Amino acid sequence: MHATALRELYRPLHDEAARQRFVGVLKGFANGTLEQQLAAHYESVLQPRFAREQGHAPRDRDEARALFESDPLFQLWGSMVYNSQDLMWQTVDETCRRIEADFEARARQVTAQPRGSLTLDPALVIPKPIADVEIHRQPGGYFASAGPDDLHAALIYFGTIELYRSAKGLSANAAVGEPGIGRFIVSVLKRRYPDLAPRRILDLGCGPGIETTALQEAFPEAEVHGVDLSAPFVKFAHAWAEDRGAAMHFRQADAQRTGYPDGHFDLIVSHILFHETWHDIAPRIFAEARRLLAPGGVFLNADVPYQPARMSIPKQVTNDWQVRNNGEPFWTGFADTDVAAKLREAGFAADEVVATYEPLGAGQYYFFGGRRARGAS
Ligand SMILES: C[S@@+](CC[C@H](N)C(=O)[O-])C[C@H]1O[C@@H](n2cnc3c(N)ncnc32)[C@H](O)[C@@H]1O
Image (cartoon, rainbow, N blue to C red):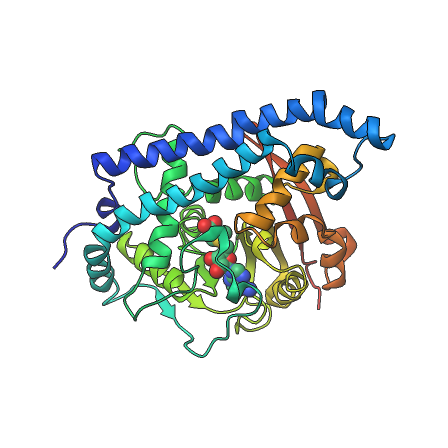
């Protein structure tokens, strides 16, 4: 019997925590201070130089890219972003490898007599191109699995969420694995759809299911489901829910073809699924969500607000660099997609569609989706 709960098992030791905090600070410096310096450098040096030579300022990232790539400050920024990403995986891996056997033993134990369910699909073909990509440059990617109990791909992803959480200044002793953005999504949902009382909820691309738990917390009477392509992720999500004593249902499936019946859900959400989805696939997921929604049901997705028209040229260039070099290959395709148009093409009526920004801290989150009219066929 392994008596320690999963959230108690994930505890970086002193030296691990120190290294992880260093990585968090380094990332904060590269993506914050240094990126701001780069933006100022663009305004004062790069843009005037380009304008002198070309007779106009760069109009988009494609025109500006070469200007940045030959600049030493940009090169410093890029190498710091790239190396801090490697350091992140190395330091989090240390903690994960140390606790993995205990974590997997506890997961086996708490899932032996489950309240909820786990449905795996060993025959599932992971769609291309995501099948061939190590998103975020995660070593081995989301789908690697060395056996039925192997949770490593999910555990290391989880560890990086914890690293970012502690880098934001939350105490090392604060509860591990608390949903963050999941609770924010719930607050947006409740404000926008105060009458919503879902009986069945689906989280598309639920990953390790941490944010999914916010839905179960907010709607305790509802049946909460999560689907994800990755077997280790849904296994982790199942174990995490069981360890919390929550009856939730996880399924390994492609969000394009989930296998649930028509009209099965009153609420379908996703968090940061679509910027990791090839832009050709996203419309098929929209159509599947429309099929799965009951009349009056809501589809709401939260994602990164990186639409190019909203971004300065330096931000467009640094984002594009992340796409090319740092394991975010679908980011630009998503940002360039007119999601409202694609939702309409997928069968949502124009007056059902939302595509908007919600404030969060100093920044914003992109929300899009739609509501299926009551009585809609
Ligand atoms: C950035 S993760 C987000 C996970 C989770 N929503 C969270 O907030 O932590 C994106 C997830 O989407 C999943 N995913 C990508 N394409 C998918 C698809 N076509 N069907 C189901 N899941 C998918 C990936 O496996 C991954 O777990």
